[in-house]
Image 1 (spheres, rainbow, N blue to C red):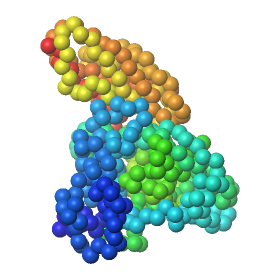
Image 2: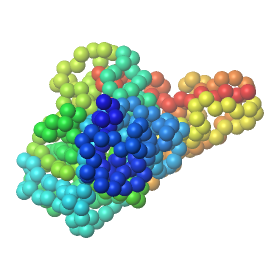
Image 3: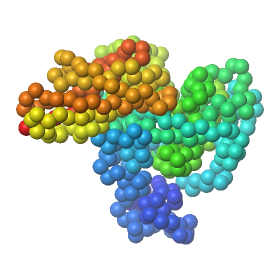
Image 4: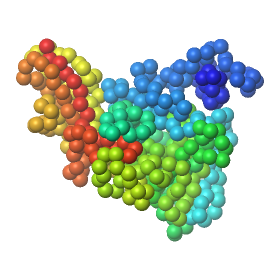
Length: 406
């Protein structure tokens, strides 16, 4: 059954990617037939991911990186996390793909082909940080439901596309517009065509930012299938669920968008601090917008061993949602004291920032290196788990690696 479901839930392009070549006569595959070359489906080969990544779920696919795999300043596809809510769309044809702009606050419905988007509007490239709102969920106690992400549901690739604001302006926006909602071609897990697996959005202020893109390239190539080919929304600094994949419609709303995963506990947290395990009324939940300040040590790998008297170079990234990282520090004594280290400026707004420093250890033994970033508003990462919330969102506790000096 699992093998049959694999074929049923994978489009021909994905099969071809998994096989490493074109699936000739693929449209003639008998129902439920499994190509011999895919008797044992390999998600790492299917999505061109590094085999050291961790698969959290297969229906839908959710895959994360480990901290040391994210050492690149620009995240390559092979280390980029996958967060899906539904099934990857089938039979994608970029030549016939269209994007429709509509909604209560659209002056008129308008549809663009992918070729028109590329030719009519100026193209822009930004390096943008995308982090799953649930990154770090595995640390919450009591446990929160959902994929148990550790620290690897974050990336910062280069995205090329057209500004959403330029397309919306061309289509026409009414004065009462307050929100946009996205709609996409991915399928609900039930395969019910009347159900959307996810349809989130953002306030007009976010939709109209320079860096909010309708993207068609990632790191200079067409966006990989698992990341939204042929067209996706990219809104850096906010939970990655705002950056919808496989976009084929944008609705301009005169109210807060109310699509699937916009209400209840989905990507929302208590507006005020609550006790762990508490029930929170719907009206007391607030939509997650800018992500909190956070950092990640990407070198060395946790558990590294060095010889006594040797110094250790550490490096990593830090980010702060809509803000910038103003200060970076590390601690060797479990947060009792902190030492400042250099942090680079972002290459553009909403890109992560890089830090590196060399540290020494007083004697042999076990140590932990803790990293702490402070944003441009003066808010620093908490040393341990921040306030509990029902879905385990926004864990920005200090990242820590273990070091043994021998």
